[in-house]
Length: 425
Image 1 (tube, helix red, strand yellow):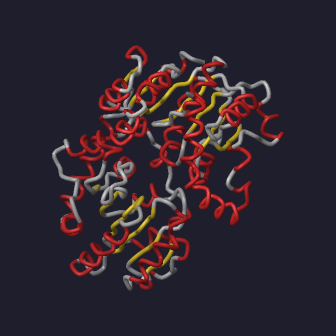
Image 2 (cartoon, rainbow, N blue to C red):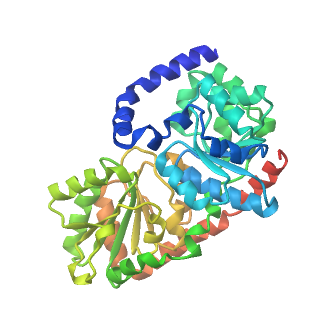
Image 3 (cartoon, one colour):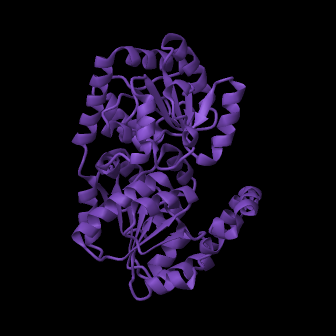
């Protein structure tokens, strides 16, 4: 069965090969971590881990890296000196992980899920425990850990509706894969029900809550290098549209044109989810004839500030939410599944999101259940809500406070998860 899976994985990867080779041509194989993805690491790294048997934390990209950073800080508060190894899949996730988990012994790219890559990686790292965040389930990796008697836990676990449908086709195989996970710490009841429906042992499934509610990093400090942005925004109605995707920016620009006709001094801060798409979004802005400036090229004089600021940096979005009059969280006007709406809630900002929130369904329901509407179905409703919140500061403040109440009420998942993780250390 593993052989069939590996063959299927190989053919599934083939369509992505041309794009990967193009990227490798620009940044080189080391820039994309090709050797690490094959389970081969430099001697300096393996020497640093020699004999330490680290806790291996795997965080695919940005969101999972945030979850990992929260867990690591809580774990190290209880277990000072615990060696931590962090892996990611994307370069963006790696950069965020390096910034937010400085206590880690090393950072690597996750090995491709082929027997050779996985065996080399586990031999080099020799972990005592592996934590997979959210929805990361890799059959060859799990099987190899099982035979090496390395426990694996799924933390902040989630199973989207799309994943559930896909896994149903290979349910007999998937049940065996799930048997190799020691504990499932799931975000909510719906996620727990889905993993049980796929064959997980009920004795190994526990609902711990969503760790992202416990993220306090965004409130810890406001970086001095953004002071100039604060001065430029002072007194203006600011709409921050964060984590947007292809097909979504054009809708937001259409909406903003109507917003500007009603609130002429308003500013749009547009932050694509993937920084490599900034040139693509620049083209959209030029085609829409919208004056704009990149965040890294802001003018010194507020009178020269164009109506659109295009965010071309990483790690700043959470802080930029603090400057917003109203926030729209992307990946939700197009069928991507939505993104984390908790970041702006920490700053008590009114939050809007679209109809496609499958990946954050329970969080969205918690916000909607507070009794104030945050969800918009289309650009018409988006325009109406943004203009309303620009003009009615009391309503905006009330929505922001309601968002923070939801956040505050749901804290505690990190501590519950760490308590369970400690049983395996």
